[in-house]
Amino acid sequence: MKNKFLISAITLITILFSSCGNHQAKEETANTQNTVISKKGPKSVLIISSSPRRGGNSETLCLQFMKGAEESKHKVEMLNLNDYDIKFFAKTEYERGESNDNDDAIQIIKKMAAADVIVLSSPVYFYSMTAQMKALIDRVYNYEKDLQNKEFYYIVTCTDKEKEALDGTIMGFRGFVRCLYNGQERGIVYGNGARERGTIDEKPAMKEAYEMGKNV
Image 1 (cartoon, rainbow, N blue to C red):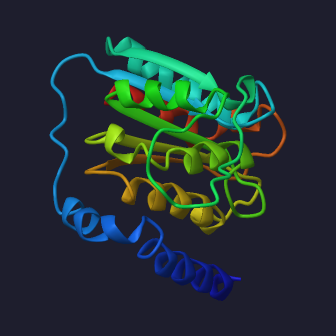
Image 2: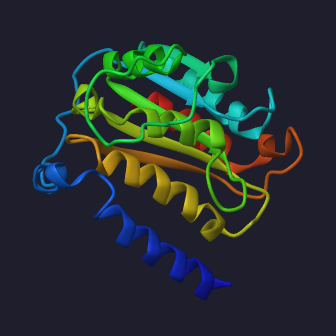
């Protein structure tokens, strides 16, 4: 099983180096050398949940993160992608420019652009993120420069007790952030061994999500 995870990770890493658009590659590589200077004082935090199961384990961890961040006087907004209409990326030519799609994707991307901190949350489906989250990430194409200098946290849950089961989803998040401009990964909440609604309540991830939010 570990060999399969290793092969998958190597494949994903290989793809990352060629998936941001050729003309951006040199700029992007240089940007990864930089470090985001964390904003002093209250921050604007956007938590993006993608689970269709309301009150589920990943959403519960999002709420814990939100609780911690609000107690530290940060401005927090949490949204669930299932409340929005987000069309799949469907451009036939990879040309950068404004999108004329009449859906909610650009509205969410504008919220991301206005935030200092972005939390991406997904349960693991077949060792990857939800289709809802992937659809939003794909739609960020053309808007990478609007998401400069952001701090990112990931909240991921799965039934599997092995931490490696989260690797595919985390690599997908990291690939997305790598294609932005000077994005910085700040922390990950690992919600392993949580299948039925409420099983996350007794897991260490609950405290970790709260503390991570509190220390944004």
